Length: 250
Image (cartoon, rainbow, N blue to C red; front, side, top):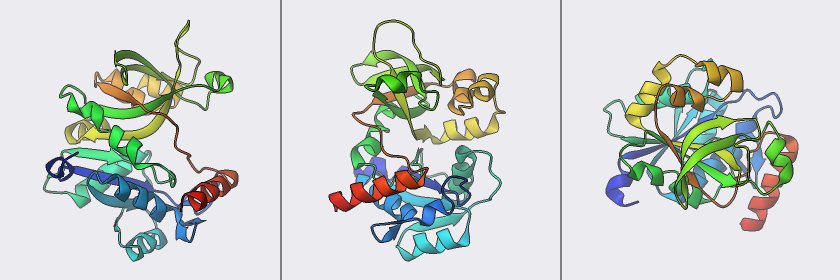
């Protein structure tokens, strides 16, 4: 991405304090820094645009600000991460300068820069509304695990699919690869604005997968195939693993 393009992109990192499995997750210490600061650092390494952390608690706001990153307070009652980043977008960029919004989840402290950059590639096609990531499943258990969301897509190149469906079921049937969805998104600004204006859809409610709302509304989602799934920190065991990974890397 060149400098002109990065100037049109805004990286938004949602951070919620409420977590049933890992209370206070954004402030969990990883190698001497709060997790949310580690995520912001990973986004900075990707060098794809201005970074704003969308927070819902004063302590998280302070931690992000103390680390030199920009933070914006958002409401605590958002139903989804997309709603939170939309509020943050309106506050961070009321003039509408950012044309692309990259949503990097706030629990990915070990993510490499390349997957963040890869999420932008499908938007090179002007017909694509939303871009996201996937990786081919190699673990047989994951193929039948409902916690592993699968992308059902039509190949449009060796490294890209056009999404037809997202599901917790084992799909598609028959010979061929299955793909594990990675929940990192790049939206065209107008697509994000359209998305948050829509009511939850039938299939979204059935599968508990927010991205189905976009597909049911006729929006185009293209999916870049990457090499690995970044570690999402949801439990104390995940947190210890993230500490080991970053400690070794540093």
